[in-house]
Image (cartoon, rainbow, N blue to C red):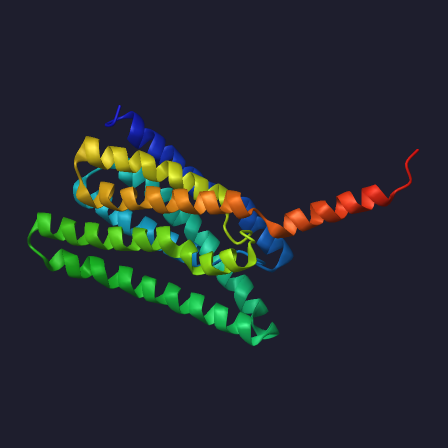
Length: 236
């Protein structure tokens, strides 16, 4: 089960993680505004897919490869869409300008990093060492992806509004982390895979719980407003 079922389920769930954001990005492109969408997890997620794709080629694991290659393609589209929308809206206020530049700097840093690192690793004439280096990089970036929602946690607790936490992606991340933790520990005994996914299971589970606990205050407000309006209508 841990060598077939878990990686297959993990691969399917991983692909769903990237696909589930299509509607969110489509709505942002239609409105020409990202709204409450946090762009940082998308940039980190894109970087994580690239790192794990490199690592999958180092260890020759097709499950890891096919769970991340679709993410590279889709996340590239998402990130570019977000950056274009943010750029067009960046002139509206200093806050939007600052948010755009922060996202752009992170994206350009990752592009530069993943251009130079593979070239540097190719110089190392030790397959195990080069695999460990790539695995360590993938682990660090993946951990950044898992903790990216922490950037808005303080605001969520302060406002009791978790609308900035995208529940479908968080839920898919949680399920995916559980699957890859089991595969990495029991199937491959690969510390880079089961280590980061063990932490991911805990973090993503916490974020899902917070999203369910606090909910979407804006949605709740609209529902309450609609209920108040209905209460004021004359009863027949």
